[in-house]
Image 1 (cartoon, helix red, strand yellow):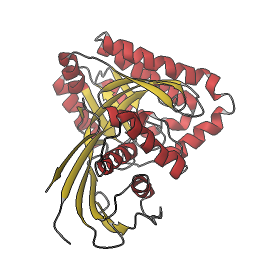
Image 2 (spheres, helix red, strand yellow):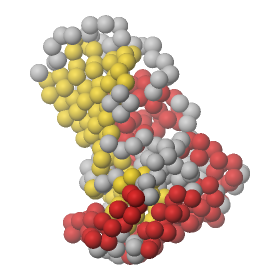
Image 3 (tube, helix red, strand yellow):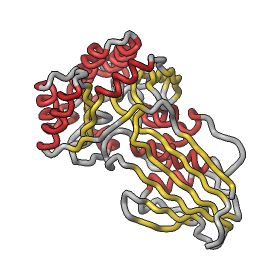
Image 4 (cartoon, helix red, strand yellow):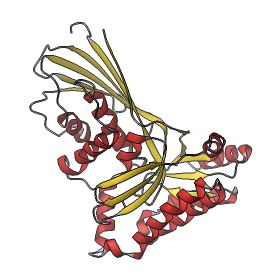
Length: 344
């Protein structure tokens, strides 16, 4: 292959503690979500060469230990549809070939919006091939279209927005899929305390969030917009925002607990036995709150807000790891997707 003429790198955060999730969907109609952008990032690296073959895009998917090539004009969604559809959604200028590395330290199916972060990071990196820059809102919209329009999957809008914007946000969805993103202005010392208290655990069973959505849609029936459980989740998003803006982490923890219980009320299958075991153990250590992330179901992850005692947090992590659950270290991400590029 010829000499590299340009390098592009993008990094996009995932999200935890999505309070108000399920209200950011087409069947809810309007909604509100509070969520927190965190590391580990999804990383995309692109190396640009002069064109040397018809299959001008070579993908290196490090999490799957796979490498294969695509022809941008004839992409078939058959190996990794999410990634293939993301490439297909962007214009790749003529006369160049690309090698694209994609990697995330977050386990696949962890219900923290990793799929959305992959789309956001990849679209943002491919955007750097042409003049101008897409806005975070536009990147999020394109990433959402990949899942819903190109692949026909069920997806709310919050994951893409969190990954594109970063930070701690209150998302007001006026009417699906149109929304306003309001970053919460939180003092640095409170952010530091929140970060110190957060813990994330993967139960070790990947899930398909689109399938979980279908299960809930069927259970809600035709009146989802007015369903009191959906309305309860909308209100909890506002309560989480108010608690954090007041600097009251204990109140935030209680909202997390309430949110998990409303998820359970949506469908009993959303909070599986593994989550119940984690919640019981966590509360035995005096934690402030537990929130099953994303769609829930029989896989994914849970966010725990500890009580601020570092030694107790370490002991909780040890106890849950002994049960076979995976601790995923997280830190707050004040930034959304970021892109750097250099011509060589």
